[in-house]
Amino acid sequence: MDTYRNFINGKWVESASTRTAANVNPANTDDVLGTVRQATRDEARAAVEAAANAFRGWRATPAPARGRIVAKAARLFEENKEELAQILTREEGKTISESRGELQRSINVAEFCAGEARRLTGETIPSELPLNFAYTIKQPIGVVACVTPWNFPVAIPVWKIAPALVAGNAVVFKPASITPATAVRITEIFEAAGIPPGVLNLVLGSGSEAGDEIINHPAVKAISFTGSNGVGIRLYEQASRRGAKVQCEMGGKNPVVVLEDADMDIAVESTAQGAFGSSGQRCTATSRAVVMEQVADEFVSRVAKRAESMRIGAGVDEQTEMGPSVDENQFKTVLSYIGIGREDGATLVCGGSRADGAGLDKGYFVRPTVFDHVTPDMRIAREEIFGPVLSVLRVRDFDHAIEVANDCEYGLSSSIFTNDAARIFRFVDEIETGMTHVNSPTTGGEAHVPFGGIKGTGIGDREQGSTALDFYTDLKVVYVDYTGRKREGNLY
Ligand code: NAP
Ligand code: MG
Image (cartoon, rainbow, N blue to C red; front, side, top):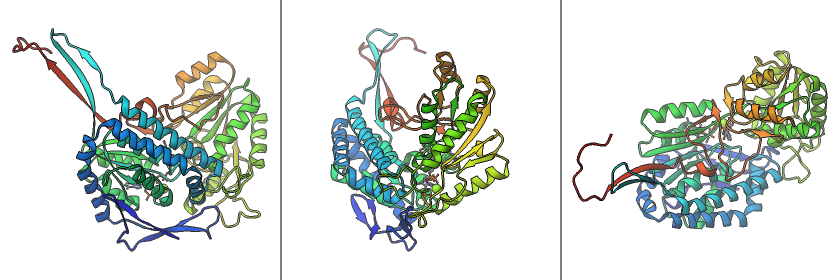
């Protein structure tokens, strides 16, 4: 059994902390992967200081050379893909095919970012004055903290660390406490790829202690956070008070809108995949279905049938379609929301309890759950549950559908199911989400496409794609005068 270590200044160091936590397989709580010691504030500070010291050398390394190291990391992720996918499934619980998908996404992101190293370009801008011009350059910021959640414990760290490194920053990586094994493997891969000592540091510790120390350290110039709204907003308040740059990707309450002409096979399967895939633990998971009254009976009965047919079990089994909730906390949260839905008067159509049966008694399995006749004021229509629970809201017409879909504090992802081009484009115009899908699930995204949300979901620059490096670089504007004469008059 492993005792996970921190990676500080190029060395794997055992924490001096006496506070430990077991890393438990959520599909079988008898299976303990390892023990983590929760890093102390001193250790978190040492990681930031190591990064601050390493920054100058890394900043001076040409961007294409930095990119070559990230490209090597991409190849190592590829070579170790299956091993990492197995650890991910054992640690987080998602199915092995979901884990392989997450690894592939991570490889794609690393490859994309490596290529961006050769495109770290600015613009040249003509001047109003003769024999003058201006240009821009993108420069690294300094020490960047990457604070990440447990639900995509490989892909999210990679989509923060890779662009941060390519841009020339030094990184302190603070993963979620409950997914240390994947965090260690990610760091080992960057180490093996040739990242110099101090340029990437890993701190395994609690958010409230190690995390707090990192985000409040004056040497940390930028913080890229993905996680819950409660934590993200507090972090944003704290860091912005000292002028640090912050990017937060937070919760979702993602709707699908099903119009009366929708292809029901596609709408039902996409909704089920979006709602129950990864046990509902994706930030882009489908948690509301906004359905036209005329087709609601058919939609609900078919989604419920699909929910009941989901093969629930340990993710290592290739046949499993849905794994467990990540831990006891999350499991209890999901069950408590199911109770709230019932008390608030929604109609429970299927699921609604822990899943039992052969092989399920030692894991945090919840049955895929569908509530019908949910109204927009109910808590299960408004709050992120992060479990396999779908709330169906019935609507009278298209305008009503848009109104209900937008009646939500979050704005991450959405989908529409229809073949009516006019209503598709009106939906695309009016839906208040950062990403939207036409006739496909709310989940999923590609490495070279920007990712993120609006409203209560997102603060700061978008991650990935053409915007991946925006957050991790400062823009410098340079004015050049080659007249050889002193300036007469002023430019405003
Ligand atoms: P979380 O509880 O907010 O934690 C996220 C990270 O912040 C963890 O590393 C956590 O450490 C750390 N943290 C907690 N308190 C902190 C503090 N006071 N100072 C500094 N760091 C602190 O989120 P989670 O439960 O891991 O993840 C689930 C959430 O992530 C959901 O809300 C989901 O929607 C969201 N998410 C959003 C996106 C997106 O792109 N929009 C993608 C994936 C997930 P500990 O683990 O030690 O608490
Ligand atoms: Mg948490």
